Image (cartoon, rainbow, N blue to C red; front, side):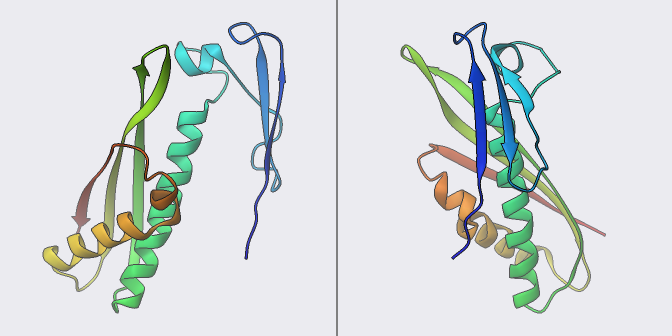
Length: 145
């Protein structure tokens, strides 16, 4: 079993408050976030949705590389972007869509097998499973020469 830790320190009220996100590896160390970076165009901080997106893209990319390797194909490169949509839901919000876009370079694989492995990785990556309550998780996978 593997456990990883992240922590947040928050000060102030919701709209005017400011938080800091840290991870045990130090990849994020008191990295700022708040209302402006989540709901407005403040680019000085992060937000939960882009962190979820980064985690999902990273997990999916690794799951795809493992699935390809297990099937006898070595990935040269895998580039994945995750768009996470935060939508109004009554008085609050919910994540209603995550769209993964992946481009990969793999020698000796045909398009059908590539798409099959991509869909398998989307289904089986731990973050996809953890995010199963998101109504729609989609994938566009492109095989690069």
